[in-house]
Length: 483
Image (cartoon, rainbow, N blue to C red):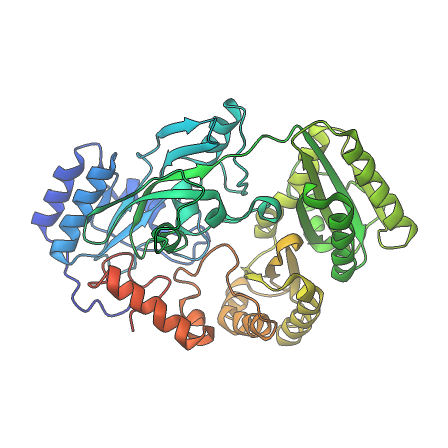
């Protein structure tokens, strides 16, 4: 996929580059190829970009100065957080005509209001740092991702990150109250309000969340905090099929109510990969099962009835033949070991050769039918392909990944990415689902969005892009192309 025609884009001049360096000071920029190299390739290694200059501003005013200079010169700018994204949305194009702006130096927690249950954090704060700061204040920030030790909260907002606790707490759209951002002309949008209710017009915060840096650069956000869970019960159960997992989920919701914080699904092949390639893991059940469910229930006050209810749920499900076998963690150490099995699937899959990945969502009730139909179609398309479909049953989000057949050549398999993705995405659309549940569109799914989105919806997105970024300098070629 190549970059769109730059139209009015200009090439960075020596004068512009010097002005940008002056704007951020000597610690705020680099043009050293060795320093820039990790920032010019995406997490999956699908895209390798180029830039004449990487900026590292330390304040929102410095970000604004940089954007204003680029806007005046008609030179595009690419914002980047932790560069953990999976759709190529934070890496410059190969032509090298874009300026890369990294938010890592903007990493202060400006305020933590325990009474209001809010935290104001700058975009460069590592997610794990945000979680720790909340915990130190006896509060809880629920966003939890596999990359939480390196992803940044600004990127989480820009991509509307989800994670494992969406079922109970929602994704970033529901976890952010206010936004500070630099708009494409260099002006600072000061929307850092901590209000739960503000019905005074269009919600510009929600427009910026999930915009993937195409409408502005998020520099800080007001995050919702919650009472910390004081009880956590984690169960790992074997089931025969995705339909059985869905039936168990329905029972869990009926029995445990909103205490169900996470409900994850993984197939046996995913567990086999983890056991083979991730040190310190072991099979928690006595015999293999076709699929596994990881269910977590939490409470913010001591409640022995919750543990009893979870055990009773599993016992009844086993008596009814819905669950083949199950175990409940005896404490945090065992719970962490069970979560490690689920969270290690992406890393384990790397050791099995090429992988074609999809981040999709369908209505929860349609999940078993999607799994059956999509598996049937991809195995007919690529005989021997190994389907590794895992994810968040509770919100219908499945990472429908395809590992290469055992005797296949990696490059030959990956060459079929577009063909396989088209088939998977067509199946998703047939079931009124989404081709991107939590990773965004970026560069990887740009053409698929054009192919599959409602024309009116696409028209309105393009209109918003033109209105806020008329010269298309803000992360051009990602998410949506100007019409």
